[in-house]
Length: 257
Ligand code: LIP
Image (cartoon, rainbow, N blue to C red; front, side):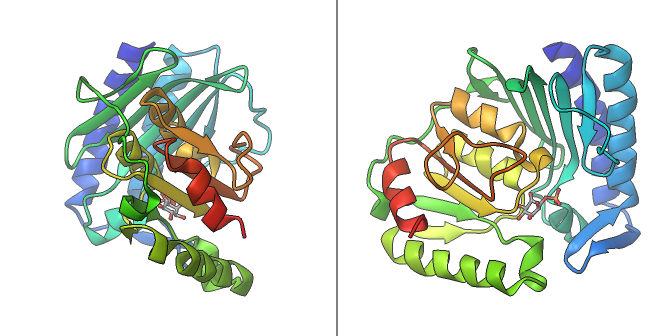
């Protein structure tokens, strides 16, 4: 399945890349939440070939109506993670596909066709970037840690969420090396897996934003939890906290106050 899935995603990457260098028709799903014809085209391509080749899985995808799809043996697709980057020509944008068996992560691919970076992980088999094995950073000191975060689309309409974002920055920023906001949750998780960032947290993500990245990070030796330190539930948890595992407890202590 891995080889076939990568082949399909690489082909879909050509659609994303063509769109990246073209004019885009942007539609607003919400005040800050964009969608383009390329999100739809990449998703349709992935759905068509995944349902043809992987019949034992159903598909949950960002631009589709998933209300009748039961999460179990599922392929969870984000056709363009980092759509705002995609629209504005920032090359941090990727196709993210997480394959789940009995609700457990099995296979994960995050592909950034602009930088030609292909992250792949299979449960128990490690995580790789363009074939090179990934390992998280060994830094143990939060103060020396470079972290990443993201801002929810709801920050434009929900004052509680906006205040929570600001509070967490205030609680975390003085206690780490610095904080980045790159705009693609799937790539943020891969960058923790790669050891570039020691940790990452964000609120209000959707299953497709992180379905692949969580496996890539855990296969690279990282840790992913909710804000209480419990198992992260793709569909239910408000916050994801993802680290090299060494700074996890200290980061949680700053976030959950
Ligand atoms: C986006 C993320 C981004 C996050 C946004 C959104 P989209 O995904 O990856 O980092 O901050 O809330 O979820 O909508 O571009 O697929």
